[in-house]
Length: 230
Image (tube, rainbow, N blue to C red; front, top):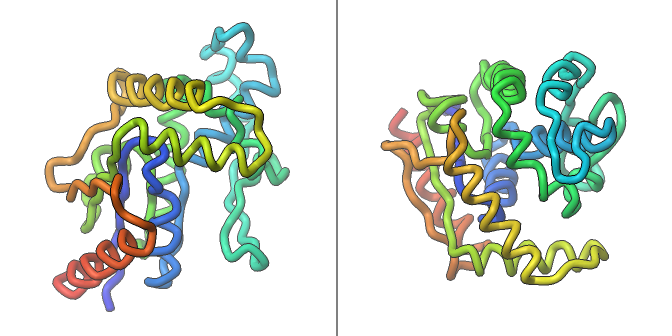
């Protein structure tokens, strides 16, 4: 069966990574979580004091990009790959609210996007990948054979994120998470470089009232039909 590139874009907390990972496992494809890459760069910026008092020193961060190495390392026990920043497993650190507060601002920096888009395109040279993010179908792989655009209301997405953070032991309020979701939506959709938008040939998928299994079954069945036609 011919391998294709599957691009999954959409708003934060729409479950893109969960569906992408499950789809990749079912197809025997490689899953690439581009959000984890931007989160790792954001963590680097925080650790090096390029972000302080809500001010982002974008010039210093761009100048330091050559010091950053990113790798996805498979974890057989968890059945997924984890993000390593400069040789260190940072999977837990990059999922915190502290990183979430700034990741959209870091992702809007042209120099950061240029570096990470080049890495992402290199990862997809052999096809057989499922990649999720904000601009996969519009910028990274506009030639992708299958493009999905995931959406749901801000309130539903904030509730999902809120539960995840509580499960991890973070001390947050729903209002704080909802505010962050709305802020990220605005920044992602209005940034000058590669704004979040639905590709013209993408299938929009509103999963606000769907469980994970129903989402996966519908997307998996549709994906198989697309692959058969290629």
